[in-house]
Image (tube, rainbow, N blue to C red):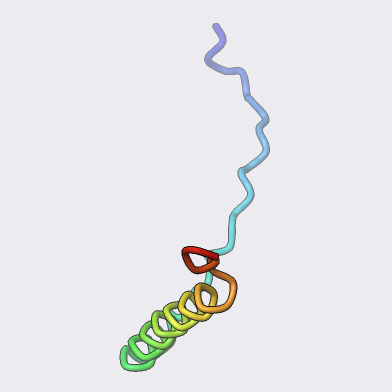
Length: 59
């Protein structure tokens, strides 16, 4: 008997697709940004351990 009961439900909100900032870049530019980020990370890690690292042994 409950076949003809209408259930009123709100439609689920439509989420806009996420836009990636790297989607429209050329492959060469993506590769260059990737390597620049890797090199910058290594340089920052080196500088951190050079200036803020632990004291030398025996001090």
